[in-house]
Image 1 (cartoon, rainbow, N blue to C red):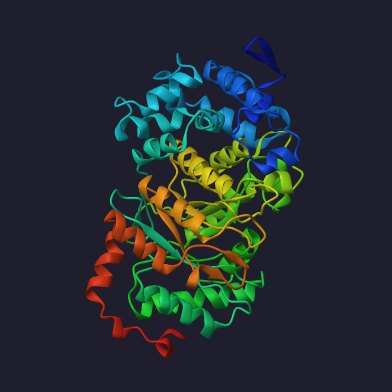
Image 2 (spheres, helix red, strand yellow):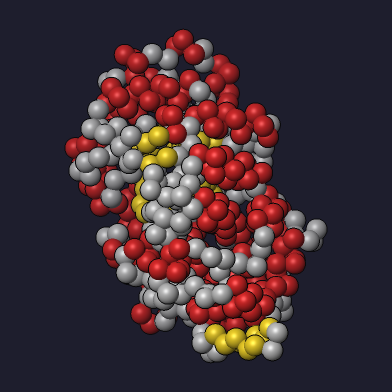
Length: 453
């Protein structure tokens, strides 16, 4: 269905909802690479006006990727027809996208009402309203929303900031990984998860690393959870062989074809989810959140699986996949894919705030890997700005990487000290269980030799 808006006697027409969403998106290199972006500022403003006037009900009636050919679309639309979703949507069903923005910014949108609204929002609605927002709007609305999850620690509580301790090593050396874990623990990092990206995606490496983290956790009675970010099928094999797996990880995207490129689909995610739940790794918690998902704008385009839809809308659609599994952690690895998709610090900053808001609007526990690659037009000052803004927006957790420099993945992220800065600046504290452990465990008890099995 075509959409149009006139500015200064010039009429701009957008051939479909997908085209309108793409043209309304603030500038970014990925949409330009895909020839989807607005070709002028005037066209972008016209698209934003047309989008603001679009009834929210239209976003339920025009699928941007056909229902018949994409299981993510089917998940989104089928979920929107459930009693919980229809009841929640009824509270805003008369609004346009622009009116939804005004509502979200108003005092009527309270933390309680926004939590109740989440099941009624589709990813396309979240993406659409975010395209009409300034940075301060993205921050203010997200600040109102708290999504709380728990495995062994409780993440997402107001006034708290958690971290993923990321002790990657270029050869998966246990001593090197243990040294980084020690460093992070001594600096108060690791309450969201101790999560390792392995160099070798095989069952033996995965199992060894899981045993390493589990040994450290039990040795020092650390309230946290482990994760080794291997492929889903590798983790499933490791679980079958008795590996001590806490959180189950997978990268996900916003289209069926993107997920196919990752070697997964919804059925496989469900099978793995049930397998991990059967391990009962947090027996004190009767209903733990056990999934950890990572996403990033540009993944669908890089896989040739974007269906001529802009990358930010597809990112929001990935959150529908995550929401289906009630995860413990979700984070957008915002600048990791490279400048082909987010060219510079300005684009990375906006994308990180967009992703954070859209995920929270949909009811997800959102963190962010505040990061950039070395060939992007960005530096650590840009990351400091995004870090501070996400802290103001109430981000659930960030990454803790030794020196902010991941020596295995070769990209720049945030350090243990960055988390300490944000906690001190905004008077934030770690997860309560982890904070109690820090207060009762003398630092001298932590030693590298005892960390190695």
